[in-house]
Length: 191
Image (cartoon, rainbow, N blue to C red; front, top):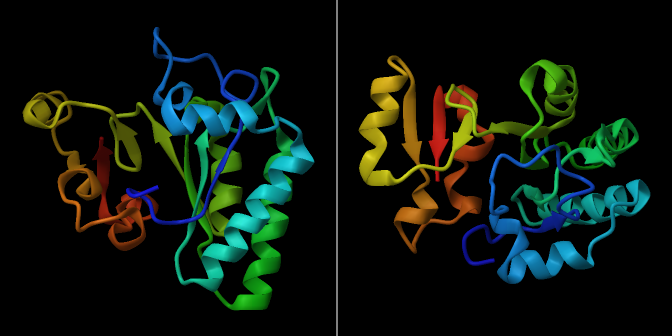
């Protein structure tokens, strides 16, 4: 899309997401994202193949892919470990062939205490995962930009970076890179 300008993947919202924190559903249920997620498959192999194509295309063009524009790392209420291991295998193979070190980024609603070992494994393979709705370094939150001082007051010592691609039509995810460097930049990204 015009914001990311990178290859992306979708998984169906519901069977591949943990319990949703949004009462009325997330952005992935509507518009173009909703259309794609309704057509996507929760099948593990299909998800791995789709991610492989996106990561190869991204590596070929010097960008990184956006995994799970909709969906997450679950499948029917459990962490889809086969999917995670498959993503790592694909990323490691691409690294060997291309020499690149980062291939994709995404977000998860899975609690950190449950997902952190998998996040670290994905990170080592070149896939950056940010915790969504977590007000800490390396997290991402949805918040009104003109009320960002409230976030800062609640979280002293944490830097919050407004999504540059939402602030300017001249910036895209492919040029900004904050979402795959939040821990390095010591920020929490705000959308």
